[in-house]
Amino acid sequence: MELIRKAHGEMSRMCDVTYLPYVSMRNLADVYEKNAHRFDGLIFSGRFPYSYIVSQVGGILKPHDYFELTDRDYYRAFAGILYRFPGISVSRILIDKPYSAVDFGDVFRGDIPMFFDPFVENDASSLEAAYEKTMRQSVALWREKKIDLVVTRLTNLAEMLGASGIPFELLFPSVASMLDVCGSLFSLIQSRMLTGAMVASGIVSWAEPAGAEENKNLLSLLNKFNGKNGMSLVIRRNGGIFELTTSNETLEDITYGYTDCVLSNYLQSELGEGVCVGWGLGMDIVSSGQNAMRAFRESIRSARHHAYLVNDIGDQIGPMAGGKSVTMSGVTSAGIEETGRRLGISPANLQKIISLQEHRGIKTFSSADLAFYLNITARSAGRILSRLAENGWASVVRRDQPNAKGRPYKIYDVDCEKLGQG
Image (cartoon, rainbow, N blue to C red; front, side, top):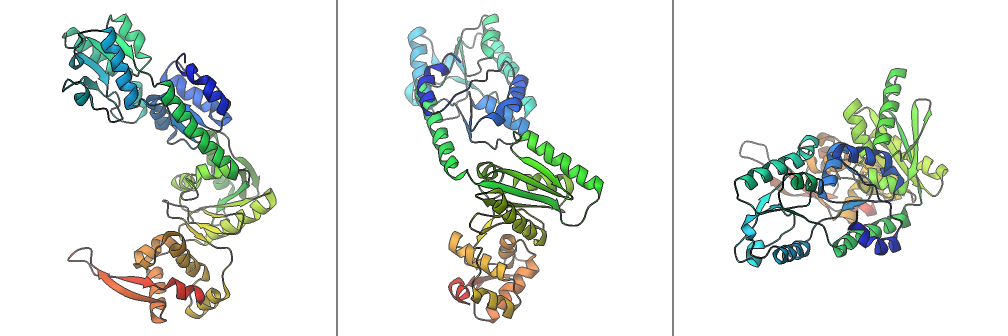
């Protein structure tokens, strides 16, 4: 805290800063759970507390970062160590393994320190035991007279090392490094706020009518998800439908930029694929709610009931699953409507194929590729491609065979420009 406060003056010129000290890993989890929802962004004092919280909550949705040691911080620290401990051999120093590239061998002419990486696995039990593991190795090497100094980022280790009579130095990021992190996070928050003023509404319910017990379980899971994510959703029950209200900024967080809906994934993992989620954006709660209902109906129609979004200008985005969302204009041309009716293909699916080229530059598909993007079965996708080819809007450009025994499959090139003209 004392060193972080050296950067306080510059940080406070960018934003309001609140400090939340903790005394142990379990205390850190409690501090995070009670306070994370109060802030626009979070900075952890290092990778260690950040990794611990990720192991506890499974992912941090708010903008965040952590202070990290840069190569300049390591070189600066070792310059001070060599000044204070003249004649010390760098190879007799035990140091936490750097996460950034630090070429000790080049700087110290082949003399490199001993490394200890306290993180074995990124789970709570390993992280909680990191202090003890580091301490055991430090004591063992000290008693074997293999080290003269321990250099660590683990501030809570200082008292344990001091009590054992082992010389130590604590590593801290420099003020410049901390300000770099703060400035970068502040810029991210600022840019998000410019687009975050819109209202986001959500509709959550079952694809098929459900009973009282199913709805009770669904509400319980919604409240549990909300609690884990800073109570950022206002949840209201309307019969068998659950209406959610939040900000566009929060919606971006829980959909990873409109590509993968964390809420939908969570509910379906607990309750199966029968739960549908639709999101809507608008400048007021009425328009965002109307768009959410449009998206919800699309979620019901989709094969696996993934989440969809209709934004403030009527564009449909989805399915938001696995980072594969497709943006489709809210206005379908008369030509697309006519082509769809003539070929027996949904105009919405034709529009998505066009959008894939316009937004992602994708114009060649196998039936599996198209099924992935349209969230339909491979058989349905193959039927669409065949009908497009029969009518001159697509052509087979090659046949791929994944292995010698498998059947070859066709790769189609879709003439999206011609398709868009109808």
